[in-house]
Picture 1 (cartoon, each protein chain N blue to C red):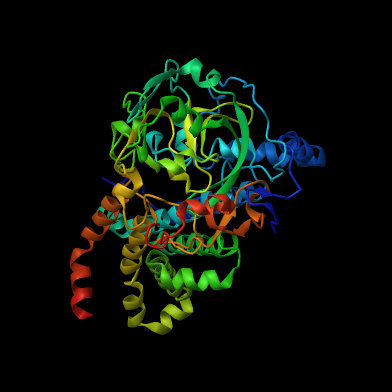
Picture 2 (picture 1 turned 30 degrees about the vertical axis):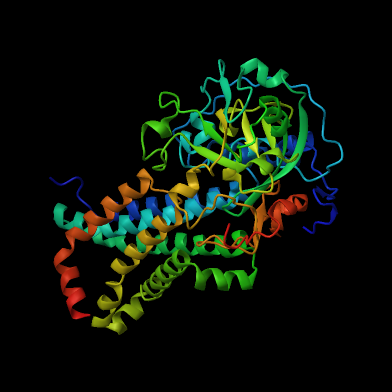
Length: 331
Length: 203
């Protein structure tokens, strides 16, 4: 798939698969007479999940009112893929663990604290997350450090709006984020083998100018509804020009600080994951190439979905933030 | 304690069962992946399925000799070749999924990944060993090779260690699963400690 760039952040790939069409694909197959084969194979379709039931997810997502992103016709990843293939080690290290283990995750009540070097610290409760700022849709590419990517319609508000309300002090240089720590609800925090041996809570950080950039979105929903737990309910960060692990999930605290804060993956393996973690095709992960990626949309196994990775994930408008920095060293 | 008396008929039944399970499971998982019925990324799911399947089958084949000794029934050994060959088949599928669907035939990338990434180099080496063992499992070759056949097939212990290294290295963090596999591998190698010691000294 060739991708032409119209604006730095806009892909113009016109073969958008409408979600309703995508969801109808099985009916199409059925009408072609595949009913026998699919009925025979359906119980085995999830080869690894013999012991999981196929109940509908219990978690209730609320529909959101938002300004939709109209001028970004990218091929969007189907919702069921974006919500069933997740890295969220608090709920297990396998990609299918979060959707299986997080459905009873309770996000209401929730408190997001904004504090640190600010003149007006404040807290946001669950309902406030959806009402305090006008919500807008942003269709962003999400590039995982594992060299796969998706295109996801997020709903949220620029982090800058929230930070401005807190009125940062002059000494604030960085923003530190923290995920909920609740071992009762998060099996990965109870057992280090379930959670990959990470020291919880998960923490992330941005430089203040990165946090204030308009692309940086504090996100409360996707695909028209509030976030499901496996995608970081009720509130998560989305920084589209950085590898996915920077986009911290289920945030309870945002602090403005003076020094570069510690970040989870950087602490765990500093030679593999940097603080900046900008998408950069010229700096490989020590164990795999970052020059290209597989874009997960539709099509199954035979989809030819390997595409070249773009600097800053194609969001070139952020390049000025890093003028004069050696991005090979500060990866 | 003898579980079952392995008559010839039962050996054939067990062999058929292994063929059916290993074969059907592989076919239906590929079918689900091709028809986009797997949740998430079919490539990663297939890579894990074939990789872990190859390791499971290899460990199964390595457990048959200790089982035969414990049960005092040599017939268990008769299942070794087909489980080993199925392990090779899964490993080959694992490699093909990597080349065809993960790297999608970008040959420059294929070459650089195999050469530059230690965990892929290690996995590829294990596949080369399994390939040699699979080819020489043909009865005619086995007879022709005489004593050197056993020497060659002792390298299966190197292969299982390389596979464990490849598996561990491919993960981002420590997981319970890998510890369980390490314990099983360690136990199976412990049963053969005398043989392995001799094997290592001769080298």
